[in-house]
Amino acid sequence: MDQDLPLPLVSVVIPTHNARNHLRECLHSMDKTKYPNYEVIVVDAACTDGTYEMLRKDFPDVKVFRVGDIGYGETNNHGMIRAQGEYIVSICDDYTVHANWLDELVKVISPSKDIGIVGGKVYSYGTKNTIVFAGRKITISLLGIVWGFGSVREREEYDEIRETVFSPVPMVRRDILPIVGLWDPDYFLQFDDTDFCFRVRKAGFRLVYVPTSITWHKIGGTTPLGSPRSVYYTYRNRIRFMMKNFPAYALLTAMPLSFVPFLRAALTFILHNEFKHFKALLRAFIWNLEHMRETIQARKYPFYQSFKRLPPQLVTHFIARASRRSLA
Image (cartoon, rainbow, N blue to C red; front, side, top):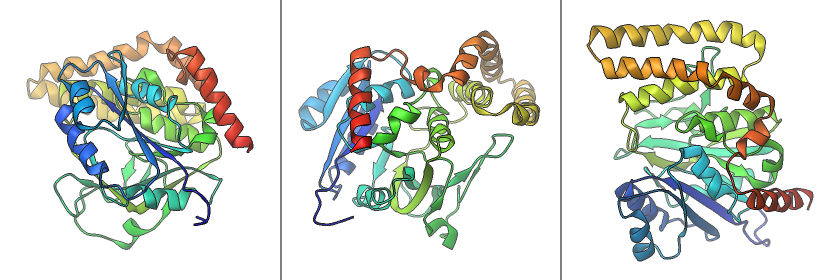
């Protein structure tokens, strides 16, 4: 970046729902951020645990918007259309951040107009070197490969700036949003970030992994891993993601392969008498059958579908402002 130019504003959007203690720790870590030009936007999705009062008392500089009891992606969209920054970061409330996390991302994305998203390395919360994310690729079965997951050894490839297909904490260039849209609100939970990154790449923009931008994640902090809720959204949205985004020829291979873990999980739940989990699995499959028409519409018109249920006047203003910046 040219040091004679003013640093671009970064908007940090944090959707939250009844996670006051996680959010407080997240915001305290952000207070140490060295990058000087950023705003924090918390979108309160019908919290009933005193989150709003805590924010007003302890974090008066944070912008807070209250919305209904809606999903993560839709909550995130409410923050994105209100963001003022040239770059917008979406981060969950159960993350904490390194002081240099924004500097490193801006340093990489700012000079390259072909980069649509950058994202950093994620460690497991409470550890110094247990990797959660160091880049990712998606396989045809959509099981995916996350580089470095669970590793406690730093390898050369984990510390290289390189192409990725996904980032769990994406910083997006604002001026590409009139092209790719926002997050898909109908996933509700999980795969909405994967879908967004997929569409950015499909639009011709690069996604880049920046290992020097460090965050820590409390895995399962907001949705416990292995819970019926997690099982439901994981399998429901895996199927929906493929039906919405994969070309027809890939679906012929991906869909049968995706049913292998589905059937394996069903058998495991039955054998272990985990009937709540088994019911969650069935509901995931049934949901996709019942919402096939909506998924097909989202496949045809992903841009318009991503703005669904947002205030029309804010959407119009957001797109116009972002478009002007892209032409500047």
